[in-house]
Length: 547
Image (cartoon, rainbow, N blue to C red; front, side, top):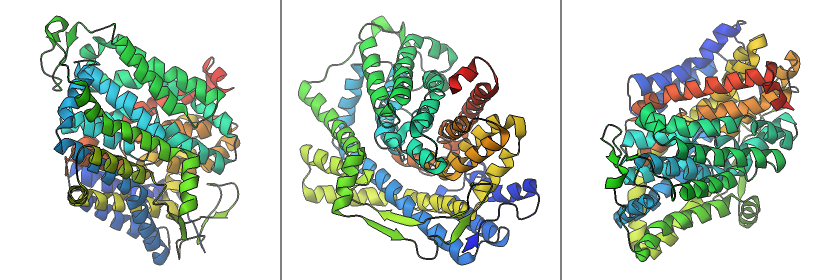
C-alpha cells in the first residue's frame, strides 16, 4: 500500500506549483496553443504521470492503473451518454424535424433570447436534475444548433446555463455523496446549499442573456428573465430546505418552464430578436408573426425529446437503478489500485484506503436510457432496424476523437485523485486562515474544474472542508456546502464538459475557443459565490442564512 504525499518539497507553495503542472499544460495546450483536444489530453496525461511518479513518488504501476481506470470511467458512463444523445440528435436531424421544432418553440416566443432562456436554463436544468453527467449540455447545445445559434454560442451558453442546478443534479447525487464523505446530516447540507444557490439561480439567467446579447438587450426582456429565475430559485430553496436534495432540480425546472411559458402568453418584448446573431437588428414586435405547424407535425417533432425526458427521468430514479442493477451489474475491484492507496490527514480525519471499484452498470446507466429513447423515437419516425444500426455506427465514427479525449481527460483526473496532487492544491488554499470561506469555496470550483463532476469534487474535498472548518472554528456545514456551491461554477470550464459541448455542436477542434469564451464567466461567478460564503461566515444579516 502506498501512502499519499501532499508536500514532497516540504514547502506547500512549491508542492502546489508542481501539482498544478498537468493542469497548466492541459489548459494551455487547449486554450492558448489550440492543440486538438485529444492530442492535448494525451499530452496532459503524460505530464500528469511524470509528475506523480517522479515528484510525488507514486509507484508507476499504481499510476498507470489509475489512468486506465479513469479512461474506462470516461467511456462509461460519460462517453456512453454523449454517444447516445448524438445518435438521437442525428436521427431527428436527418428527418428534418428540427425545422418543425424551431417553429414550435417560436410558439412560445419568436425571440431568440427567450428561446435560449427556455432551452438552456429551464430545460437544461431538468436534464441536469434527472441525469447530470453532461446530459444537459449535450441536449441543449444540440437543440440550440438546430435553432440557428452559432456553434460557439450554442456551446458556451449551454455551459454557462448549466451551473446553478448542478449541485442538485442527478437526483441530488452530489449532496448524497457529500453527506457520505463528511458524515454530516444530508438534510442540513441540502438546506445550506439551498440557502446559497438560489441567489445564483436568479442571477444566472440574467448573466446568460447578457453573455449572449449584451446588457441593453438583456434589459429589454428583464421581466421574462425574472420570472424564469424566481420560479426556479423559490422551489429550489423550498424543496432543498424542507424536503431534501432528491427532486430539487426536477421540480424547480418544471415550475420554471411552466411559469415562463405562461408569462409569455401575456407579455412580449417591445422588439424581437428573430436572429441568433446577437449583432442583428431586432424587429418591432408588431412586425413578427408566429408560424403555425400542424398538430401532427408538432407531435412528431417533440416526441423524441419527450421520450428522452421520460426515459432519462425513469433511469435516474434510485428504485429504477436498483431494479436494473438487480438484473445485471458487475462491480469489478481494479486490480493493483483498489485499497492500494492510503489517504491520510489533514485531507481526512482518519487514514483510509481508497476504493477503486469499476461499476459496469450498462443496464442502469443513464446513457442506456437515452439509447432506449433514441431507438423508440427512431422506430416512431419510420427508421427500420438496419438504418438505425447504420446511423449508430456513423455516430460512433463521428465522435471517435471526442470519446478518446474524454477517456484521456478522466484518466488525468483519476491519476491526480489517487496521487493526492489535487488534495495538495486544496491544502494550499486551506492555509488561508480568516479568508478560508472565500478560498474554501474556490477549492470546490477547482475540484469540479479538475474532475468534471460536482459529485467527484465533493468526494475529493468534502472531508478536507470539514476538517479545515473545524480547525478554524467555522461551521463545517457551511464550508462543506460551499464546496458544492462553489463547484457548480467550475462545471463550465472542465475539459470534459467542453468536449461534450464541442461534440454536441459538431464543432470539433475548437475546444480552446469555447474555453476562452466561458473562462471569465466561470471565474467571476465563482468569486461571487466565494464572497457570499464569506458574508455567511462573518457578516450579519447573511450569518442568519447559516442557521
